[in-house]
Length: 192
Image (cartoon, rainbow, N blue to C red):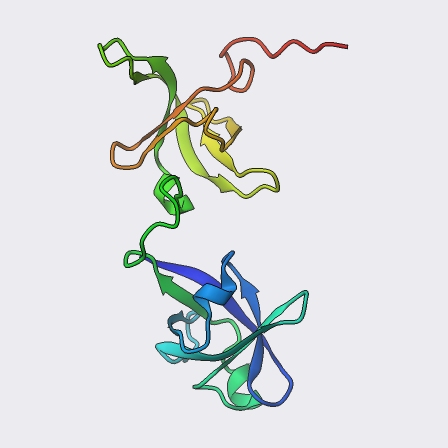
């Protein structure tokens, strides 16, 4: 699957450098010099099928790149709006418990229930809703779940609250505190 790692912004200076709007947390790995990236153009815009990164730099606030196919400002300006893509199917996962948002979207969210088998495992209980996306956060990401009655619940994406993620089975099992989902236990007691 192709994922967007950056959108090319305006040209910067005279030697073909462009500003990048990043969509990745690893720009130095994804956009390393020598990397050839597939390109997606907005409708109606002519574009090369791929671009080769020749230089990548960070000025402390913004990222800039140059490409072999755009050696001057005029050709660099023509790249504005193009999306730089990366193929994810050929990569090995960085972590065992790491997922892309598209792998989680559409999964059914069920309440975690103790299993009744001899192995003491867990089972899927009551349907809580469907995962509609992942919201990035400072401390942790939040799993967005739409309940059957249309409410959106944000579940902190931590192992204690989301102990099982099984994209192959199409489910996530949640162990939410009381009050997080409508009709599921009372809110935690507030102490003075």
